[in-house]
Amino acid sequence: MINMCLSSLLVVVYFFLGCQTAPLEKAIPENYQAQIDTTIPLDFIMGKFSPDSHPNFVPIPEEYSNRKGHYLQKETWQAFQKMYAH
Image (spheres, rainbow, N blue to C red):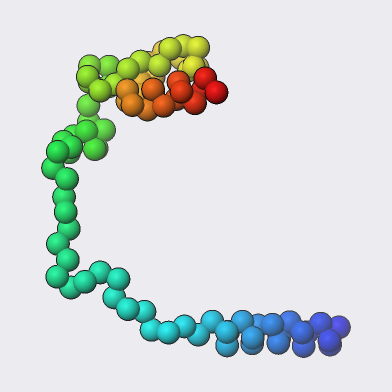
């Protein structure tokens, strides 16, 4: 029992001594300017749109869904069909 406690203590001490790391450098330069993509409307990003009337969305057939009313972006649907075919 004492050997097990000493072994556990040594492991804990070794862990804390081995976790010392060098100081981190700044990952983001001070003069960094964030690039904001304004080509995607904010309402789209926030989900404030109706996929059934959006030109970039297609309905998912019932054979691939558990109910009506599910939509995917065209590109995603095409990738799904390609994956499903294999």
